[in-house]
Length: 601
Image (tube, rainbow, N blue to C red; front, side, top):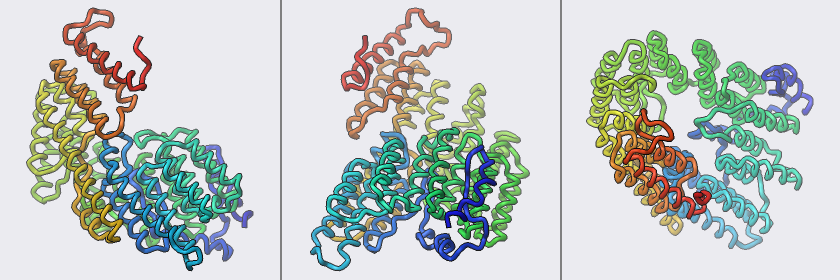
């Protein structure tokens, strides 16, 4: 079996100068191999795409109650509540506020304690304990309680409860989410040193592969070293005779899109190998592949591959075209944009992407973007009016219109551009649409440049109000999880999740930085700037977190920079500058008192 797995290594090793895939040479696999390759062996129908593009295998539990609880946990995450979806500590303290996190973990802890109290000779006790611990550790990882997850793993071993691949995969996933790659690597080596057979399971290798593939924030692309780490894990996996499954392939294809230079040829090789060993690509596979084509700007090739996959029997979804559509629309290619939109309608019968119910996204948004970049603002505005008449607008519609109105960031902000952007903003509000956090951040700077700081303050307060709404929603959910501990009834949680607010708007530590920048740029009174500086520190304390160093540094740089472009370094500061410098000193002292900076000197 192992020799079959290595036959094709040489052909693929030419890609990027590294060994790549090493799978079976023939489509007809030995019976033992084909059983492992068939979907369903590892519940591949439950594979889900996470918000950060990570391919994840669902935790397989024999307990229907715990399976339902895990499913609700994933639903919360998909809808932006109790979700580990942000690197910003402030918004994360809202989404994962202590009461909700504690309630969720307490629910799974109660099931673990109940299983522990069962009589030692009770049939099925060991399996029930395994389920309870696996789900508890998985919940800790989701709630960013990595230390607690490892504590439960250690307790599990001390109690003599068999630890399986589900637990190891969850812990490695937690290390990836916390960006603690070295800890994850050390843990995996420890498992191998102990001779843990489950450590060689495909789910564990998939978690290890994804830990390396997602070791950087989503906004950063992977360099050669990071990519090499993931392929090294895969090569070791194959060398050990572990059979890759759908999640493995999806992860590798996604990896090809996250590199600085998207490698669509390697992604195609992954797909070819996947099909050769009898693992059929899913909609997640195809979407990941289209992301590679879109980023690599080989749209025609992507469209041809999508047509080929559809002919092979894959059910296509509108969202599969989205990376390709975004690429052509962003460069103002109106004819190709129209072609792809018509293609989506013809092949799927839809005009909206298959998104979550709280985030509808109409395909026509990309026509607005395309005509805006190609023809100009008036053409984009006409497209907006047509969408409004058809009842096909969403937050992204206005987002694109505002960006078209403002032009490139390098372009000078004229009075006309400002007027257009403000008008689009007002239309968005009139239609009951919430802007994205990123759009709010851009507009804060725009209003500061145009002496419209009052608009910036109003927008910032709206962001804070939206965060409060999210916090109230998560607090309400916490009460339902607390009730479920005693009642065992999870139905009320499912009902509430259907109406939770979306994470379109809220505020982050970066929002405070942008607001402080706006105050400085608009030469606002130092008292107003100080209001937002101390509000940031106060809110951090209220949320039980602290302002990250990079945020503190950004605020300090903002306060110590001259708002006057003619001000030369070394000149005596103006009165307003002196007040801001004093504010910077106070903030620096406060940070030093907290032990987060050296004492000024």
